[in-house]
Image (tube, rainbow, N blue to C red):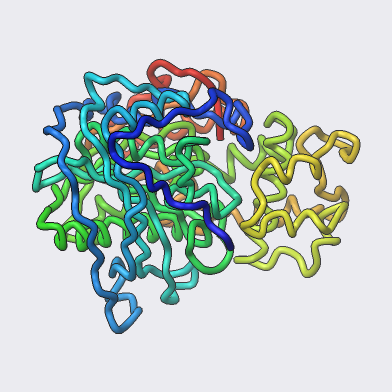
Length: 433
């Protein structure tokens, strides 16, 4: 696959672009507050030091790829070196907040390829974005941002490198880094430059990919003479909100003694896939074309892991729909397949066949724990751990997920002794996935 060319502009060159970038629907824009979600948890702040250049370094790969080597760095490739002004220009084009009082540092970004495991526990690799403040600070606080639904490899954080055209994919990480944090954004399995196909909404593999990127970041920073604060700040949006909640569970469980949870702020996630999100999809409660696309994506992704059908014709009116989830097609490519002229039945049914279960019964069965949750819980937010700073948020204009999931998540969290108030994301600008 041909990746987008890396940005080779100098630090002093101004980045400018039209307000509407090609290939992105305005509905895919996130809220302006998404990248500042941890403000709600009371942890975002603090100034960044004067920008300085950061060296380009890579760690040597380890000879084995076993579970003991998870988080080992295979390659580290520098992507961009941006001044603070350039970062703010990218964020402005992407319709994110770009407050110069907060975003005061230049940013150096890298693509890390690292060792992790696949959904079956076998060794594999994944990629992710690491964005660092261009400062003299040696010890960095880490923010883990897990992204929302993407189907094309090129749209994952570490491969969405055409910042002048559309900085949406890297905007959250750039925001945190410009505010003085080390920001990590996993591509997940099968996206970015990782092998295989993406197991969408498989929370356990999202968690392992996210956790192992934290380990890889710690190793990579050591090659630059920098260290990380073990208290990780965790946030994510949509698909990434569920992943963030699972990551918080793993951090609180002591999966790695060198890392622990500092705060959690998930935004508009599918926290209860079986009881809230799937019924909303299958009953036509999710607006077209999101409901159509998500239902098809779930069938394809779950079939790869749980064998729901033998051939696409068993569940899709047009069997070619399955090929649209091969990692090479973006949402814009899939939209014609979801045309109303091809629909029948409930608004969210789209290309999914009716009758003989139509794959719907199989989806509900596959979403039963522990498939939908990392620790055998029915909802990814049911984290039964001591209290820690946290907040769940939902966007006011959220049209592509069941809105009951966020309050249900917060209720479950409170019942489990987690401090997790629910509220709107601050200063929303638009909705996205």
